[in-house]
Length: 358
Image 1 (cartoon, rainbow, N blue to C red):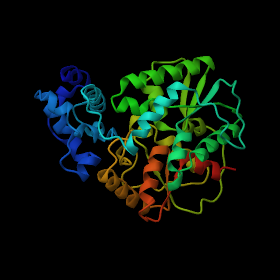
Image 2: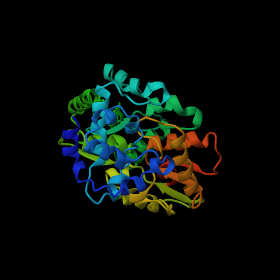
Image 3: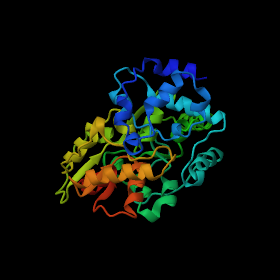
């Protein structure tokens, strides 16, 4: 099994320089974990040890390793495929929140989510411009007690679309990102097929995302569709807009999926600048931005918490408010802030733009 994974991911190009391990956020906190070591064990044929190891679930999929690898090893592809093989052997990792986020996508397969959730926005269920809102309603239910407001993210997105003449049709549902990254390819394919069928029925011509994970999954993991895909920051990038006085210092947290995976760095910053916010950069930004510490609701533990604490301290050095475009990043940071006081707010990109725009 591992031979095919090694071939497709170019893992055989590994020269054991260990640059991947030197930059890995998990390795920096927990030295026993090493991306290079996982590759090396695979290369020498210790297949059962690799597939039964819990280390394969610690990887965040953040992509920093690929950013510095001189040999072009596709470690993210390697890790996803290894997890798929591990799951077939009964190694399913340690999902967070008692595995509830593995159950929710399965429920979404059973029934479409048809709900009148948003207030004071204009939508059109017959529109061929779709706002794919993802799992925001479910996140709202789970994380309200730590101050997460998914409804605000969705409403802010639609209000901004309305401002520029778009009344979108809205789809709530799981894109399959977490299932794919956790090796559950069967569930991912079911979710993907359902979503593609819904889009076909609605005759979609353009899909706009506020969630980077949904955008990344549609753009990089779904079959090519004759549909335009864009993040809300890309939609807003060429629009005329004015803002007011910021009143606070802001920094921007580049989420892994929007940043390293999709290469979108300047669009959100340029939009923020147009509405009056000058982003003060953290030490680690853009291609070298540090992850929020948890990926695909897997292995959220003390190591994840330490990564978040470091990132929040880094943000506080330059700003009062940390802006992120990823709902999960916001959830994870607010989780830490619920019991640690770093004197900083965490807000979503669309929330801030909707507040500032005139």
